[in-house]
Image 1 (cartoon, rainbow, N blue to C red):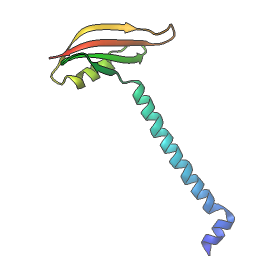
Image 2 (image 1 turned 45 degrees about the horizontal axis):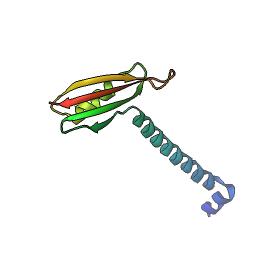
Image 3 (image 1 turned 30 degrees about the vertical axis):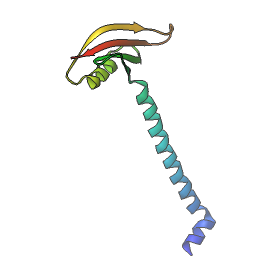
Image 4 (image 1 turned 135 degrees about the vertical axis):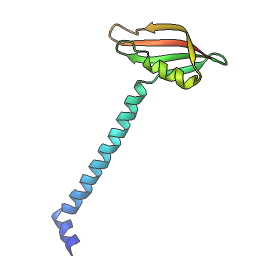
Length: 104
């Protein structure tokens, strides 16, 4: 009987709507944090057996930290930077760094 009254008053429907809103907000936060995390990772491609080319993301100030993390994952026993270059796509964008590394 109480449930029937709650449905008539609309409070049961409001509780479901509020729960759906919370779930949607949580999903939005997860998707946005995943998208932002993907923006600051560098991408590596293999040149030969122990040599990789790492393309860093556009980071204000041209930080090398994303490249260092990727190089450390690719070469757990150490690496040597063979070539480093910085690139700016247009005058308003941040610097992107490119490394060529060889695993030790």
